[in-house]
Length: 135
Image 1 (cartoon, helix red, strand yellow):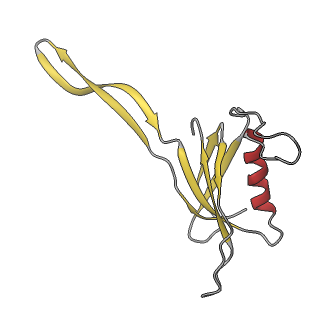
Image 2 (tube, rainbow, N blue to C red):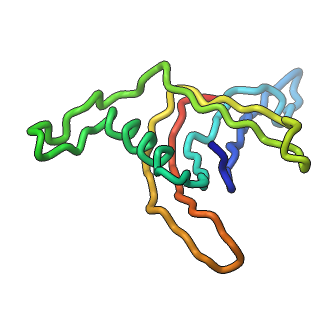
């Protein structure tokens, strides 16, 4: 599965100031690390729609929307600790891996509609939003 656009997360380290022998040492001690947990990507749709259906099925594991089957809003309602997404960023040659990132404890928050425009030979795409607890 290939993605067109991916929002890669950021990470921040917060520092605290401390006093030492009457002098304030500003932003010297690291106190907390915060990571961005909201991510998004634009995925290329395949000809059978399998990629999109897989993300929808993953989303239904958290909250099942099968109203006709009698399981209205049932599901795990939690984070599957084994759910991961691995994203490989390719170099300009589209063969060499420049960087690999893994997102852990992933829940799919949104699966967008398939969009297709025939201007310039575009490929059908859809957006996927997801959250992770760490990466």
